Amino acid sequence: GAVDRGLEGVVACSTAISTIAGTTLLYRGYTIEDLAAHATFEEVAHLLWFGRLPSADEFARFQRQLDDAMALPAESFGWFHGLPTDVHPMDFLHAVVAGLSLHDPDANVLTYEANLRKAVRLTARLATIIAAYDRVRSGQWPLQPMPGRSIAWNFLYMLHGKEPSARRVRQLDTCLVLHADHELNASAFSARVTSSTLSGMYSSVMAAIGTLKGELHGGANEQVMRMLLEIGSPKRLEAYLDDALSSKRKVMGFGHRVYKEGDPRAAILKRMSAELTAEIGRPELYEMSAAIEETMHDRKGLIPNVDFYSATVYYSMGIP
Ligand code: COA
View 1 (cartoon, rainbow, N blue to C red):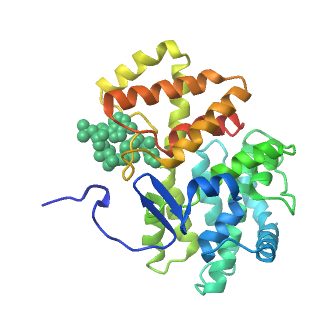
View 2: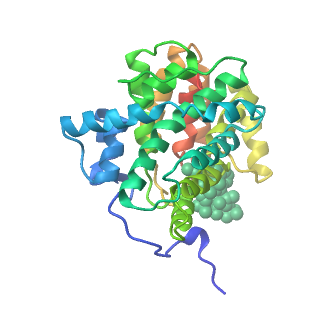
């Protein structure tokens, strides 16, 4: 029988939240370029959840709710510190989200109000968990988030232990905006399948985290960075790609199920990668990336996706 690869042509739902048309990506009708340049992640979360950008009052209220939720609950610290840290960060995140669900009285309450409370908690806490994990695995005590600051600000602060520059915060905000939604991608699809059984938001987000971890989805940028560091020098690039392509290995960060002409997020990240790698004195990382892009285009007709240039962007920001 016929198989629809990657659910191509299969309509699983309709959505007003985000739209991909050609090489255009819209969140609630706003172009991704516009939002990446002008909006914060919190504003975009409000836009995605409630259908409109927040007024000043709404923004202040939303920010306060996120503030109140950002620190991990005190009762979570005991078991958090007992977890192994020489594991994949996404597995750690998955386990801690599961653990948090056990302490959340709303975990299995499926009303709209309870769902909103959980959405706020999860959105505010994922960055805290990841930063805490990185500190614990490198033998440091985790930091508490600072109220009144954005998620991007707090993530960099809790990860690096010092106040980030406004410029870095803006750059990370842009990345968070670019990753905030993408129609029915693999992780969103997993989350929907799980939530459609009325299993609850924690189970859905855990399903999404598990799916996102895979190297053909969100795990790709981790593999891109490994590849660039393994190649090491522009001189070795051609031999590396010859070997990969002739042995039919996938080159991570290329190709896309939906975009065939270009991923609009990649264009924004490419500019950021050029800037950031120059700022940290590693311009060769960008130069190698651009050369790989050219070769992949000429030899395979494949375009870089969101994961390709985000690898060097995050690496340059000091996010391992
Ligand atoms: N490197 C080399 N070849 C690739 C490739 C890549 N990154 N992506 C696709 N191809 C090739 C496949 O080998 C296949 O060739 P074949 O027809 O000779 O067998 C053909 O292109 C179609 O590949 P397929 O995996 O079916 O494409 P898809 O459109 O269904 O899949 C992805 C999309 C994203 C899963 C795929 O491009 C991929 O695995 N990319 C690398 C992982 C990645 O960057 N993921 C992040 C996505 S945002």
